[in-house]
Length: 345
Image (cartoon, rainbow, N blue to C red; front, top):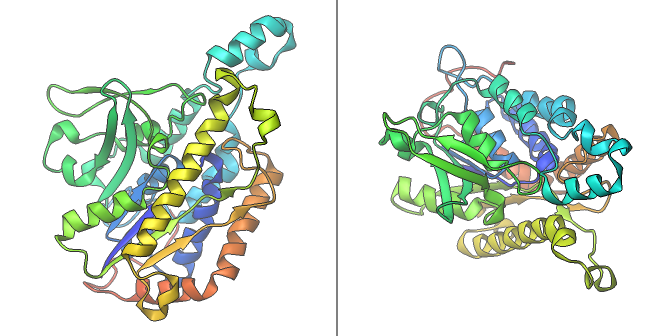
């Protein structure tokens, strides 16, 4: 079987898939990069995809376990989503403050870049332990740009530092400024990229297509798709009818992400055997409604992270039968025995 992992975008809500991935590692005794043949991610999912496939010093196993990346959200999330002091200080007054909120991105990208470098270093896309796809959107060329290990190995102009791919895929409009990324070719191509969530927040269909192209057939492909929670907060007509451009800016991002994710799930449920097929299941989707806590991409309070972890545990409990079937599949070794035992980074 060709096993594919797909991870949605969702900012700090990446806590949810990180908890599930930690559970899979604990139950199988394998690292995520050992279990899957292809890992695909958007935004926060792209950061997880990159972090889980960075090789250690020997180049034989993953540098990070899922639990290490969960700690990134728990311990470093507030550094990533930290408002600049000048935006929070009343001394600048309502006029300057209003202009700043309307015309500036919400967060400085430098703390994010520093954290990504700490976790990903100077590893390049073509050196990932397993094939990776990370989504982004080129705002100058006005088309999607996919960071692909398969392309990076063939063409230096498609090879990039993993830290740059992670920065680009998480450059959510209005939250972070676009990422300017150069390829690693002798004559590098410059690209200006934003969060892949603007067109594909749930990249599971991209993952399926990439798997078919790499495997040359759809038979025996297993897709494991991890969500970051379904927003439940309603947008009422009375509230939204008078919104202008500035007021719609952030809510519309959430609306687009939710809609595209639902459509992808619908299509894959019809393409592959789903949860209704018992032991024949080859499409697994794990997600939950965010009916407690906050669905904001940047709510990094300790109480909210605790609630996100609890929602992940709820998925593990409520979809226990599916998880058990998946774990049985992941324990099977279709090739050679694992090179390493599960050990901390």
